[in-house]
Amino acid sequence: MRRNGLNILTGLVALSAFAMAAPAETKAETAPSFVSGGKLLVCLDPTFPPMEYMENADARQPIGFDVDVITALAETWKVEPQIVTLDFSGLLPALDAKRCDMMISGATLKPERLESFNGVPYLKTGSVVVGRSDADGTYSSYEDFSGKTLSYQSGSIYEKIVADVNAALKKAGKPEIDVQAYPKGTDVVQQVLLGRVAGGITLDSEFAFRDLQKPGELKVIFSDPNKEQYAAYFRKEPASDQAAVEAAVAELVSSGRLKAIAEKWRIPADALDGIGQ
Image 1: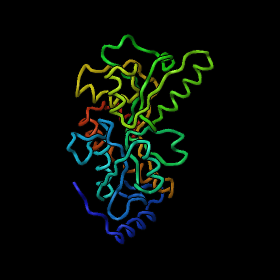
Image 2 (image 1 turned 135 degrees about the horizontal axis):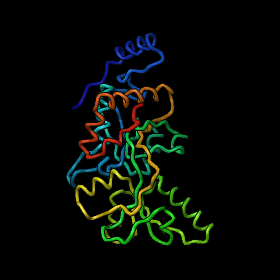
Image 3 (image 1 turned 180 degrees about the vertical axis):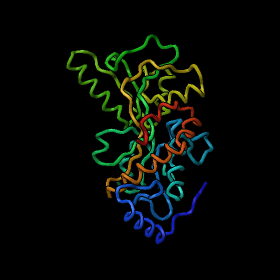
Image 4 (image 1 turned 120 degrees about the vertical axis):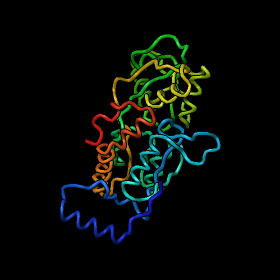
């Protein structure tokens, strides 16, 4: 599935001709500026199935929904995909330091991230708190976990979510949520299974995958009604890169390629609603 890079001179001529013919549009195959040398270098943390993970202890390359999206983008831009694996908390710093061209790693679209980077959504998702299958009851809000312990992945948006909830609980004179942060998404769920935490905060896509692999071990005890979007992040300059990435994602949707990837990883079709529009 590897592709050779575009001839640089040919690519420049094509881009120049297109710019004169249709300045208001960007074709899907028009590569963003950060794609160079025939490669697309993407940072991810391979500990978040089904988005990205190592299939077994001997695996040398990650697999997953995001890996297939990276491959599809690289093929659209006629370059070779290459992946750099890091802990989640180090992904955006690595992108900022130009150790990679993009960060595609189960990261949701957030205003605070958009202050420093551009982002293009490619899949909808929602946060859930999962507990063991024998956990008592369900919860209607994060505040209901007052006085209990939750785990989440370090460097994720859940740090801020729980911090905001704890600030409200403290103001109301209620016990705060105890937190345990772990570098890997797999560690978060492991603490739940070991009974060391009341629940682990994750995304519905990861829970669906784990339930498919080992049915009945976990259950959703709280589902956040606010839906989010997974996004591909890249540096802000030049501004034309935003249109190039948006056009490529739109093409993956209109061609049915993204739908096929979602079906492969058992992700519901409605997770693509509104994507690429």
